[in-house]
Length: 356
Ligand SMILES: Nc1nc2c(ncn2[C@@H]2O[C@H](COP(=O)(O)OP(=O)(O)OP(=O)(O)O)[C@@H](O)[C@H]2O)c(=O)[nH]1
Ligand SMILES: [Mg+2]
Image 1: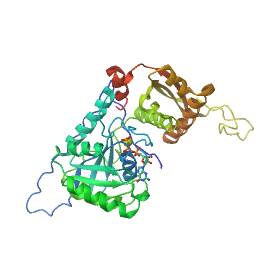
Image 2: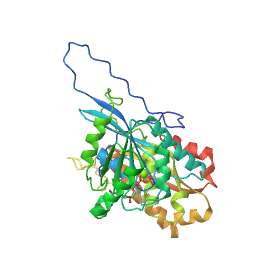
Image 3: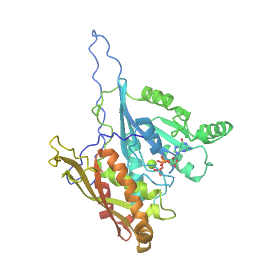
Image 4: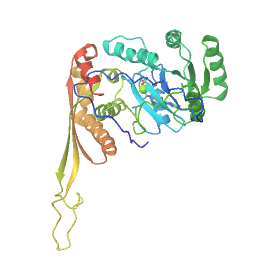
């Protein structure tokens, strides 16, 4: 999926994500003028248990990769916005961490993102995984939702990989447990029923003027995006407790102009007089990043035999960052042990502060 995110530059010294802006109420039109076309604006919180497809849905709705996705639970740790503006309205989707019982400070912070997005939102979309059996975790999610006053849509996701006759019993069960405004079977991955979902969401949003400019697509900084891209590549390669104990911190991003010297690889152009145009330069981005783990044996796993795993992570992350910036990137990755970082407010502030 192409990545054409317009991101905001990170605020200096920012340690916490900025609170979403609140919609401004639209002024009532004077009586005798022609009625303006109705414009709907509001926040839609995507919530649900880990791995239900919230980030996949955000990317599908925005038509570009904003959030990282993996088959490991608790991939999303910090909420991000996906802003979709059309001539009918502006829908601001909030992709959230999955709902789980928090054991570490990291997880408590993750859940705080969920609670604050429930407070901010005009509509809540609860995603459930059609392939999973209903359990205690789902009860827990419904308990949280019972405290919410905004309309709740139930999205039964991953219908592309279940038999059709399994969906009806899921609808029946949830219908008996909660007064959902809408129930929609979808496939975030295959784009099934997303147009229906968007139409119903716009209808449910309040009439209000847009909050973000037409160009704004997300609230995440480039720095945060780079850290997330690296983390996604790590998640795709590690198993067991490793996904949970890994974090990425971008130490520095440096943008430079590099003189073009190494013809023909560089693209330096031979001149008519037979000389070489060495005066040309090209942009390059240097990214220095640390991968935090909790123990030395984690560090060894992430580095891999003779450095093979971290090298592969670096290659894949660099390629994706290059695609995003549109030019050459040098990526330096260091794996560092930060004991018990999941309970360290300082490290967590550092990581969250990258979002801008
Ligand atoms: N078959 C199928 N797989 C899906 C669908 N939506 C998501 N997935 C897969 O489900 C897994 C989890 O997707 P994510 O989007 O990361 O889930 P999430 O809810 O954001 O997970 P957390 O961030 O951990 O809470 C990935 O392997 C996705 O490819 C779908 O509609 N169909
Ligand atoms: Mg996610």
